[in-house]
Image (cartoon, rainbow, N blue to C red; front, side):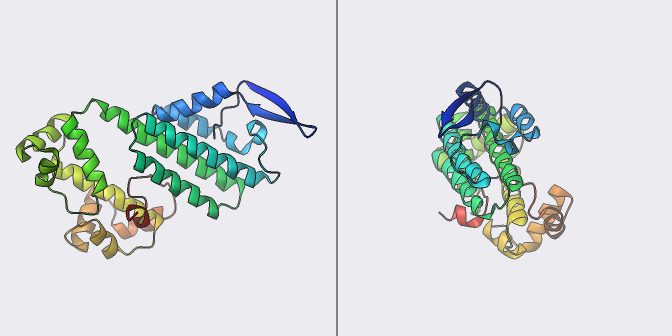
Length: 258
């Protein structure tokens, strides 16, 4: 749902004046998401215009339900535009399902705004990464796809080499040349980012999270996590539980099990 309010026009329906946002403004907003223009989208969300329903068509007489209906339409459009611009189809639709199911927990317009902002920033951030990686070599792109599709498994350079039909030494060199990090460092960071999301938005125990992402042990997971974030997993959960969802590819376990 675009929060842009420029270029409005009006129509009549059942004797009432309904104000709609101009189609060009809507398309601009969606294009900014698909192009990964995170600065423009953050600025849009910072205006908190989502609460102002002046530019939202009437799909329900109940204000909250009206926003929920428009939210579903927006997620559908954004998910498809992102697929058209390079996002993996399953990844985009899984993310769409995740946000739509969050509507069941929304009981106020304010929380609706928060969910909307999280959704558009999440998609935009992912598209920014996709565009940044557009210049990567084909073997490196294949490695990225493999890693994020197998985060819950133990991933080695050998696995990536076999998947891309290259040698392990060649894959290791590509990571250094194109990403500036070692293969193991990249995989570890990806797993830890996914673990952050479970700490924020689930009640899974530390041992469950460590096992799920195939860390050698809970203590090893805690050690790596503290080195990466400066906080133990327990302290991290206490500080961030239920806030600032980052929308990584491992949102919650049930979605990776699909």
